[in-house]
Image 1 (cartoon, rainbow over the protein chains, first blue to last red):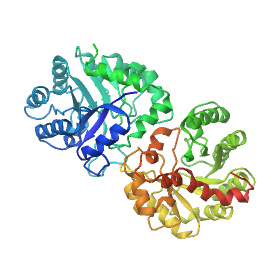
Image 2: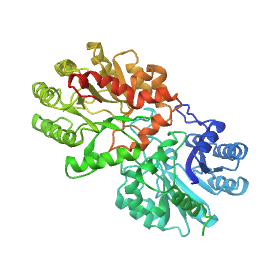
Image 3: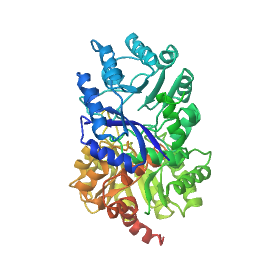
Image 4: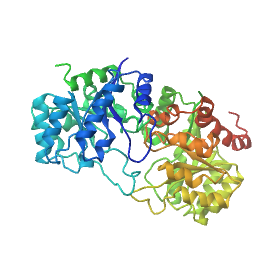
Length: 254
Length: 261
């Protein structure tokens, strides 16, 4: 059993210190949990405007501490000036295999032309795109930073418009089975389940999108890492299938 | 490790009848290694149930307990807006029936002394007292208690053990709010499995005042178990949280009812 955890973060959550927000702790936990590969974004990407520095630190941390296990997913904000240079650096300088977007923290809609252009460029360059729709239950967020979940309604059309795109939706909840079917039918879209709740939540999700579209995502260190594996156990699903899906998402299996 | 679930809603598991719901509850309890569960609220549709609806909820739970009493404990749903009828439900379900606790939800804030006769009656029967609490950035329901409300209630009944449901969900605030209320234990259920929750609860309250619950079926048993199984705590503390504290709290009512567990 080899877990590919597609939803891990480095650096500091702005509102709380977390066990695992130091790379050494994070690596120890991932190894203990049987994670063979982890795709890491940076919490700094949420609020820092200098994403160039954020992505450079992320790449360096993964290289220095990752021992081949951590794979950096840099962040691009298509509403920032000269954002294409950010994408270029992710691809050329840091040799990243994917990028992680935070449309809710960065304040753009998924029908924004700049977002669509970014998807098209990512597809053209053959990298995976992750979209984190939210970062925390909106009922428990800090009252001064009330960032709500991105509106996902435009996403199926955005995906359908870009040939060759490989995309993962992560950190979302409250979407209907009909929407999930529409989204995954629109293109090569995968979903994680870090924020999926309910005793049948993951099992239903897997039935809605088919087991071939579900990837393992823990949202560690914000969540206890054990939550994801225990959900898989509860749903009687296979982490091996999820790992195979993750490899397809990454473009490693064509 | 022995695991008892303080906080379970059978109707959230599906099924057309209490028996069908409970069959699924027990299947998943077995899968996740849970020995016992406290069940309450027949459905989640009534924020301010009238007396007839209260009886309906509790009849659902009575059927759960009747057929699966070897795995679950029933709590009676009561409403401080209907004190006389709630007292009657406590008598029917606990004094004269198989239930062992009460569940207070969101009909009226527990800082309101109108609730006091209900607490007194439950305490006289040694029943477990569970009060839902949340602190919502988006705003609580009008009758929805916070842990601060619960601390006010606990101060009026300093000798009565009371459980702070969800720890307010914003647990960094909820733990602080009840920290000085030595008769209050906190319930870990029904919020996201955010790292650090259980460790802070143990650090500030002591492991003896922390009780694991899931809030399933609305929550995943797995996500909620992770709050304890993933916490950086000694195994002995985890065992207290996962079952022993709840068992200890229940001993008086179980003994009063002649139930040996």
